[in-house]
Image 1 (cartoon, rainbow, N blue to C red):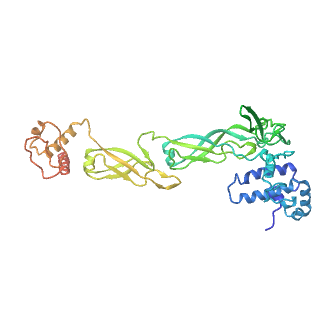
Image 2: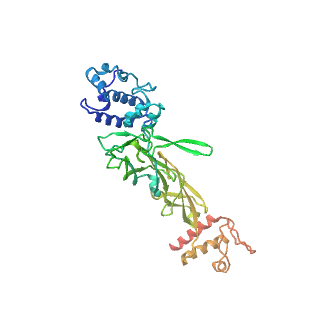
Image 3: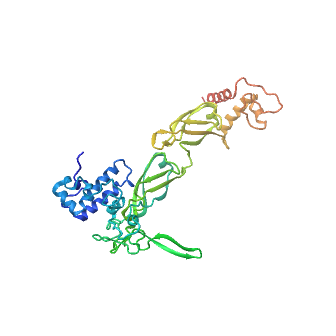
Length: 421
């Protein structure tokens, strides 16, 4: 497969300056570096970028490439004597030289540890992750919503591109650590002299420092800024769910990629107190009159979308629970599937009744107990029973009715309405 034009790889024209070539490579290399970009194609693109930068950043090889193309540089990275895949050192092949191209580091001069210069070079570091706790309303968590949040994080300085130096200046090798980023400290004790390695205080472990610090960020490379973000809250989230916003954390040192922002959700209870959420199901309660519970009725049940009609069967007992399928909370990442709504029936007994209600209840009581007259029944103590065989439980004999409670209730209602006619 033929190689792409090196200028095309970096997105530059052939008249690009050395500074433009370096700037373009840094930007693209940070985007496609395998430590940052986990895409399968990222490593291939990164190698292509590095090969193009190796040739175009060298004035002699660039001139040969401009005249003869890929043939003039031996097919690419090999023109410098080392292929990209050779990490043994020398040329542009070593890993240290990859980071050299990233941040323009300089070789430590002199003998000593052959890896000291590579340790001292700036490397791509990811910024810190941030956490933010977010309160979400009851219904917003169920149906989803777009929320706007304001965060404060460290952003890479736009003037120096996170390097901490003034534009058109270079970073200088640290004289304190000689570019290693670390210095040795010796401590004498009764047991002898101990040597330990610490981060260089002058360059803060980078091996280089800016003689002309960026005035905008004062050489730090990043600045604290407030930012507003639009966050989509998906349907079905619950307390404890974490939403990750990639790249919205703190900026990485030396222009490295930013960390992530994690939003930890906390769901508020229903402000009206009607619904209670239990995972993907919704629970509620409603009250019925004893006549409704006994005879059955078509009632309106509150749901998340509004009231819906439901037929209560005759003889519904207090505490009975009914289910409305698919009226609960959508499953996270699968909003087409929903939980159920359960409602518990409470039978309400009135504390006060008017004269008409009292007459009806007395008639019901008389029919259920088998009393002959209202006058006789009114002298008896206690209330009426809903047992199937009637009676108050005293020692006086009672005439048993053939019908049960529901028959008695229906007969009472019929009698009352016939009198009205």
